[in-house]
Image 1 (tube, one colour):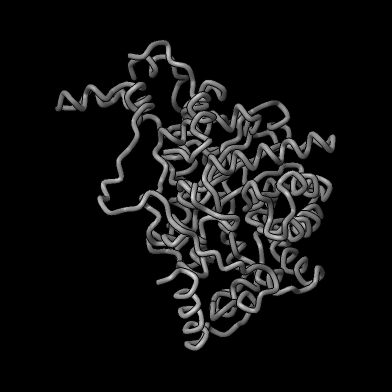
Image 2: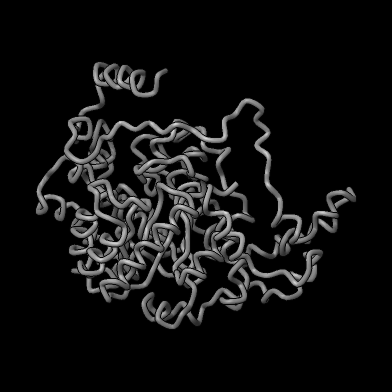
Amino acid sequence: MWESGSEEVLQTSCPPSDSEDRSGARAAAEMPPVGNDGRTAAKRGLLERLASGEVIIGDGGFVFALEKRGYVKAGPWTPEATVEYPEAVRQLHREFLRAGSTVLQTFTFYASDDKLQNRGNYVEQKISGQKVNEAACDIAREVANEGDALVAGGVSQTPSYLSCKSETDVKAIFRKQLDVFIKKNVDFMLAEYFEHVEEAEWAVHVLKESGKPVGATLCIGPEGDLAGVSAGDCAVRLVKAGADLIGVNCHFDPTTSLKTMKFMKEGLEAAHLKAHLIVQPLAYHTPDCNKQGFIDLPEFPFALEPRILTRWEMHKYARAAYDLGIRYIGGCCGFEPYHIRAIAEELAAERGFLPVASEKHDAWGSGLAMHTKPWVRARAQQAYWEKLVPASGRPYSASLSKPDSWGVTRGDKELIQQKEMTTENQLKEMFEKQKIVSGM
């Protein structure tokens, strides 16, 4: 179920049905054709397309998807797979493109030099950040050209900032990645996944040096960033820093993220500022999260599957985001290609075409009319899937969790960057603290 207080927003934003028994076959007949990949439109730049009102669909979460497939290590969450397993990265890009993504982000999340050598990470020494970032750009461009999608070069928060290093030091980290993005001529820049708006501002300052459009997204909820800056003020600060596109990504589900976006939009309106809006939330329900988001949930990161949104819930999310005035709509951790396809299908009328992946996915399950069993054939209708409340199948599972609220943020000794592996004594200290905090 949607979290308390949000169900009405998402349900009323669904496309209206002609009748309660509207069939999937009728819905399919009304849909635009499959296979028009928007090649003509894609030749325009990001800002030109957004200014025209075009809906831009982002891609999904790479570190979680590739960790499940065996190509990324949980913990560091770094993207050395661009060098070690390029075909795995290439294939995931292709699946998102086929599902409807019009932007492919370079797989450069956590690809800053300091992160690639933090706590025993071998990547900076054995491969180098430059090679990881270059390979990410090459792969994304190769696949984007197969459908003429746009490529976004991305940077994210750094261990250096959390360790209280200077603005000069942190900007130098971003600038090394930017040098690669300029060399590889990505289409625009994206500063994503920032818990503190100050660091995001620094990232925007650096990325603006490229002369290309710059987007900035914070991993914050309705309460604002971890330093206590409100969501509305965060939006204002990002625009004043020079961001052309602002919003949120990761850490929270679509419902919570759209609440945050509403506050950010109101903040811009009050300050008489304008910017394009982007939202790329989790694919997990997080009504029980606190200010720091899903990383505080006891299930993070290996037991989140019971929280995954269905494709039909993604339809609701896409419609609600569109109705809020957001025109760059995508996803982050947990988002698989079929989730992106659901967004593309929900907004197909606005975009004028369906993604290629819809060739094997009839509207609202209408393909089930071909099923052998009659009770399954009876589910070939929009009304059935819109109203379904899925069961978890877990007899002893609680509906909500109690987040681990350690209250740790920038400057805490436990966040300070170190090149050495976490020691056994450090782990023991963490284990003992967990017992106290969680009552285990």
